[in-house]
Length: 481
Ligand SMILES: *[C@@H]1O[C@H](CO)[C@@H](O)[C@H](O)[C@H]1NC(C)=O
Ligand SMILES: *[C@@H]1O[C@H](CO)[C@@H](O)[C@H](O)[C@H]1NC(C)=O
Ligand SMILES: *[C@@H]1O[C@H](CO)[C@@H](O)[C@H](O)[C@H]1NC(C)=O
Ligand SMILES: *[C@@H]1O[C@H](CO)[C@@H](O)[C@H](O)[C@H]1NC(C)=O
Ligand SMILES: *[C@@H]1O[C@H](CO)[C@@H](O)[C@H](O)[C@H]1NC(C)=O
Ligand SMILES: *[C@@H]1O[C@H](CO)[C@@H](O)[C@H](O)[C@H]1NC(C)=O
Ligand SMILES: *[C@@H]1O[C@H](CO)[C@@H](O)[C@H](O)[C@H]1NC(C)=O
Ligand SMILES: *[C@@H]1O[C@H](CO)[C@@H](O)[C@H](O)[C@H]1NC(C)=O
Ligand SMILES: *[C@@H]1O[C@H](CO)[C@@H](O)[C@H](O)[C@H]1NC(C)=O
Ligand SMILES: *[C@@H]1O[C@H](CO)[C@@H](O)[C@H](O)[C@H]1NC(C)=O
Image (tube, rainbow, N blue to C red; front, side, top):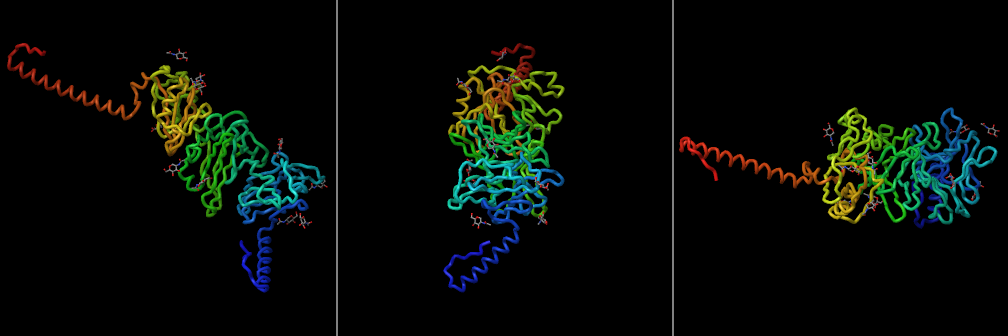
């Protein structure tokens, strides 16, 4: 709504405009039934709310039906049933509906209970003279100084809950290893911090992971230049634009919607499933664009090491990579994938080669290294130079960068749509009787076929000549030089 026209009107015109402005302001306030800002002498309590300027998001207290806990959270204003995207006091519910949220004189958001003791407070260290709290249309609740609106004193986007909204940033610090993650709720009616975390793992090349405590549950894949590869991403890229920035210190992941009308969120649910949802105004519901893990192959290392997972091959969904055999044959044949696969022939370090797999979701990059400037040829050479390097690939789908894996290959699966090529190291003797380099092999095969054909022809010709001679010589011995 733009009620103000900054022209140079006459006084009467000005008066009319002021009236229009007031009318608009009042009707806006009436239509959104919430305040646009909060200052230290004001508070939010009961069913009073804070609303973003275009009326996209609303913030206030809520509770779950008959449950005792009251929470201060953010939800979509125009979507029912109410979809909570952030909760301030998720681990400190207030028992009493008389609790309220306010700003301290210094600009620290606090939730106080009826006895005025602090239930929750933000971790703001910076202070302001004229602090004001505002809910942005991105769903970000911010505190800034009225005299310096560019610098935020605090923002809820820095403290994600279970929901990843457009414009939020997931960061992982290479130096300290600390990361900003989504954390699941305890259950559908308890937003308290649950067991599952969704974040960027940066031990090797950055990958998106879901963990339960210290345990890796599922990988969202590694960055392929456009997206973390684990999803079916063609449709996704018509809706959102993902970006990954890697600098010396940290890796930063975020996304934007390509059109303002697109309403999408990613959420990690209390059971640890990560879902990307899209609001469908027509169906008045959330459409699920992706869920992970979706099948057994999406559980981390379901087939253990040096193997490949293929759900369409059920129940025998695990197979050893070419040149590998089950570590425990009996277990493997009774569909127990424990132990995975081991090399039939050890690498010799010198003179090994590579077998190409196309359309793959890359294996675990925990023990990987990368160089964004190297070509594929240089990448192969680099891998061959190090005896513990077991695979290499281009980093992104456009064919740039070099990614190297060391040790066992874990969690390699065929990609659902456009996957990537990976080259897995094998001893030369293994490659000799396998489809190594395909063009080379086809040539070899063609050569063999031509050879056989020629041999048959020569043999046929020789037999024919021999028979003929035999006939001519009538029992005489035909000697071939
Ligand atoms: C609250 O404080 C602001 C300035 O911080 C002031 O403009 C406003 O009048 C005050 N409101 C009330 C109800 O005291
Ligand atoms: C707000 O709360 C008051 C008292 O709790 C109640 O009387 C009123 O109906 C509520 N208003 C709305 C719009 O829910
Ligand atoms: C909230 O707490 C206050 C003080 O502890 C008490 O007087 C009031 O009755 C409580 N209200 C409710 C709804 O429990
Ligand atoms: C504030 O920081 C302390 C220590 O760094 C931490 O324990 C606490 O959970 C933080 N609180 C919030 C609301 O982030
Ligand atoms: C990939 O190539 C396309 C077309 O050449 C280009 O538009 C795009 O920016 C490239 N993307 C990356 C991640 O390199
Ligand atoms: C995607 O986002 C990046 C940065 O966030 C921006 O540079 C790029 O132009 C965007 N691409 C599209 C297609 O919007
Ligand atoms: C997966 O299994 C199906 C069914 O057996 C088969 O057609 C397909 O080729 C397999 N894919 C891979 C990558 O092995
Ligand atoms: C590779 O996997 C095998 C079989 O599970 C295991 O015995 C071995 O310790 C692993 N090696 C490394 C370096 O993790
Ligand atoms: C292969 O290597 C392993 C350990 O690296 C060793 O125990 C085994 O004997 C080797 N096998 C052969 C056939 O050399
Ligand atoms: C091979 O790579 C491993 C893993 O990055 C590294 O620890 C080792 O030093 C490398 N060896 C050589 C000879 O470069």
